Length: 287
Image (cartoon, rainbow, N blue to C red; front, side, top):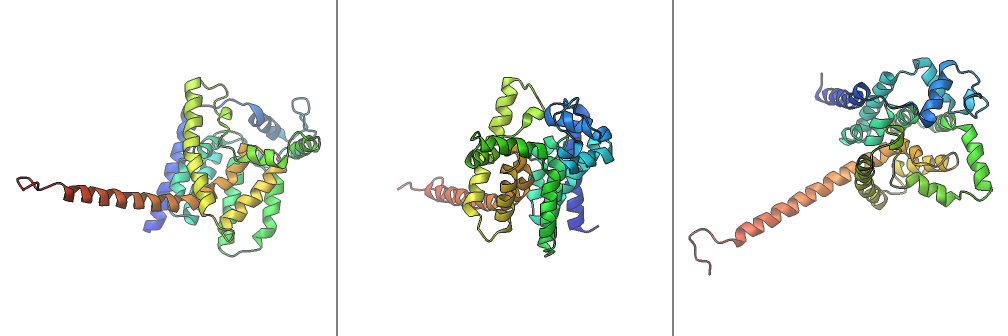
């Protein structure tokens, strides 16, 4: 086994182990959308007695079909999340290891939510595009369409038509420094909520600052993030919908952060050397 393949294998095992740790020791409750995905995907029958959608295929059809085929298997979803980390690493060296510990990615792998599968397909699409398979530009709209909740599009567009949600407001909701940990812990104690929210903000804000400061209009990352943002704000526009593009932001920021760390290390070493030279040798003349 080559060194590169060995490193990717270790990454896959590490990312999967992190996600399986939650699966083995904690069972997230079925709340919100996860509850609907779980029951609707069991038979793919009309479930209007329990949910407001007239047909199952109006509720994110690709993910609903995926859950039906895999019989709601969280382990399969965890494996797909580990594979996503490998693809991120193949696109951006070292970024796959960062994404392996990215909290929302770890969380969504353990709940019945579409973010894990959608992120995998989106990163896979970016990888194929990097191989200059431009035909995928035709496939991307199909990926988007398969994950849109059509009932949600109607509901939110109606709300926006009535002036309840502007495009700017949707954009703010999409990219505000928050993440949907209530799906994993619906009623967290105050200390845990503060820890989760505060820890995410401390990582998220510098990451977004570096991305916006250094990204260029000619970069693929810019168009992937911008394009998916437009799709998201016209469907739901909440912070969950930004997850499929977070691998690209992490991948773009990782080498920038490494460069800044190296510069900081050099400055520290230079300062330490200057201090050492300023201190007179032991026993010498301080004058």
